[in-house]
Image 1 (cartoon, rainbow, N blue to C red):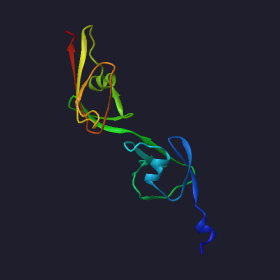
Image 2: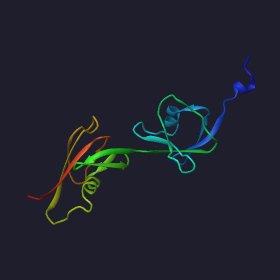
Image 3: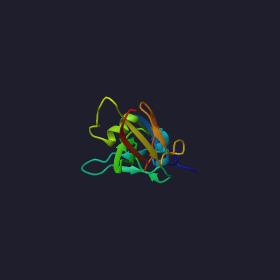
Image 4: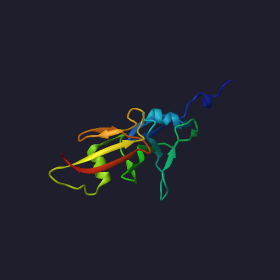
Length: 154
């Protein structure tokens, strides 16, 4: 026969990306990602007090013990290469033509007939390689490579 304590599920109020949620305690990383509707390509972190790095929460079934009003946040962090240089960016899962140009050049060259040719490779299955034109947005992934070349309009 189960005791009252065994029948009671311990719930804690937590915050994921500044929104309050009720979660069973203990829980799992997978359950936290699902609860906060955190995309599988994002990373979820537990805020840690003091002068310490926040804790990365894996999206697996590892047991996690919660504290009341604990805060978690997600971010999308990618390491990409632009014109041969690694760039660590935090963004949604896409980049615009203008964002790629600004990652390549700081500040970008200007001129009346200047345009930028952007090619990319190592993209996600939906767009593994291609070119970008002004105004376009492309879905990105870890390790994607962009080459940006200023050219004169012809």
